[in-house]
Length: 612
Image (cartoon, rainbow, N blue to C red; front, top):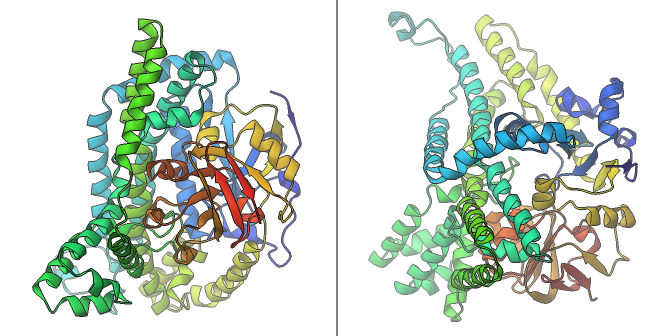
């Protein structure tokens, strides 16, 4: 595969003035290097693309923990556990606060051959026992979440309880504080080990099916095949389903007008507590919360992607929106029957085109495996990125309160400006100070360092990360890069042509035809979860990426556009399941399109036209 330096050299991206020394906020292995010539050559020979799919904002030092987690977990499952034939993993770097990743592929047939045999054996075991292993997976992950829910961070006492002596405990509250922090971090990393236990295999099942189908049915489009594995009942849609059910219950109990007229949830709690029907609805509301209100307002990757528990007015507002729709006689249901009907029709049509029994049996087997695996592509998000992360962020904030009380931080939210290694050092400083009675170093070091880092993060927000860096391959074949991120040879060429345009001059964008249909309407550019509340009925959502947690607004919007993502990105999957036209992987959608512009989204052709 020949390569050329089509994109900027990753070692030559200038530092933003005023952020000099930003590298110290992150682990040393996240920076591009010229000190090691072998590593520099490795870095220059790879295509690095900006992972806006997961990280549309600069990285807070502590929030990097999840990137570190999947840096290892995804790669080890590809390379060392399941022996995916042509893929080792994904390398990671940071530039000016933004994550860049590069697939590490295997091109030598002599190495790929033996890996194929191992993959078929190991992956085959999981495919044959998927349901049983997945049930075990849910138990493992739920057990971790419950364990983390039970972790408490207590203030250090002036003097230990006498029982520490009389019971011969032999350890202190300070040691326990350090241990619980390390346990919390390890549980977080363990949860992400499980995150990828099934994920790469679920993608691989689809890649294998797609490869077979494109040889059997030349010209078959990606979105056609995607419809054959869609129409599934995934747990990720359960939170939104609960909100719709609460809206329907309000209608049944005759409480719809009373709830809709309440501006805040507290107003509704007061008004509804006065009647038996109101109390019935309130009980249903309380029952619907756990664990479903651990749904993040964003992707869950950042600490400030608050859950519905933290921002209770968001689910309450969605309930009121659903009540308004029901009052107008509109449907609030996901068009699941239509999606299933389309799936069954397509499967039958393509099965009838197959001319040999051997090909028909292979098609049915591969399709069956992919349909079995498909729900995991969305379900794992709720367990890990939403439920687990929501609990995890709560615990870190509880720990931060102890630091605030000892003057290490000015505010609970300051903790995010330390990476996880630095936090362990700060904790040990605090505990040794408590143990010795000597003044800690942290209060004279961290507040001013955190203040500087806050300024750096703000300057990072002004940086417009190039879509890609480094060498441009002639062709891109790595399947996960194509399916999840939407990085293809064509998209690379489009990005090279567009450069780093802010693009007030572009009238048409191209991307993946992710979900069929055509829609025209006003654009609403959403740059953070907080902007979601600004969406008006019929507007077209334009975002770097969408979160499955935004589904309560999907019944109101006309279509969706994203900068990044492929046919199996979360945005593509959710839009198909909700029957919304979508074009993903446009590269520059949020730059080229302005809120209020009239645009046309063609989810059949994969184009977005700016009309005016």
